[in-house]
Length: 249
Image (tube, rainbow, N blue to C red; front, side, top):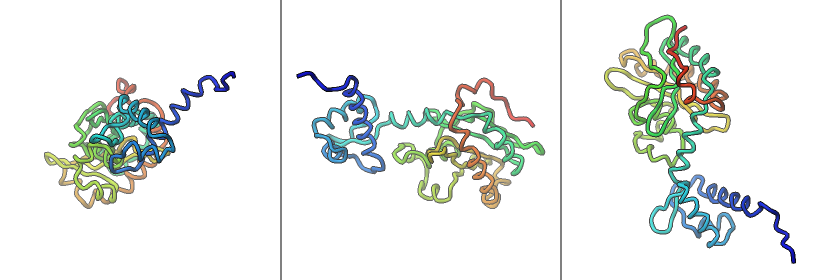
């Protein structure tokens, strides 16, 4: 009897099953066994095992112990790549408006591997302020902008361990770092689906950017982050590095 299987169906079915296995781990704080995954996706254990091994080889899952699995670093890497898609032309006016309103340089940052990268910086027109050149890199753990992205990003990101008291950071809605007499504050920028894609950071001398001022500028920073929601969904920040110039208005 002739086969009734449609061409290409086997391949697409395998992809659909792999996606189902990945989503079965969403929100999990502990490693999950193949048997548990099989039950969640309603597949035979043998089939689930083959899918899991393929995902491990691709870096999307990682073995944790002898028989349990967790989300792999490949997922985080893919998320970081997506975070680079930013329309600088759309973001710039909002950063200039913010810097002018709070009279502090405002910068936009993304994460590239282990670094926080400044992709645009807007200096207020009425006074001299510290300026971050586009392309400047800082280790995530030493950057308020980098910490804001990690703290509000994927809950399985291993870099969360570099951020003190993540729960409190998420509750207050911003990150703070101080070094060498300079204080930096950053808020996350989310896309339309609620995924963190970038961050807005400001920095000034610690004597000026004290606790009182940090609190007072938060509404403006959060409003700017909200206005950037559409800008982080398109474009390529990395591709635009060569044409980014220090902000002057």
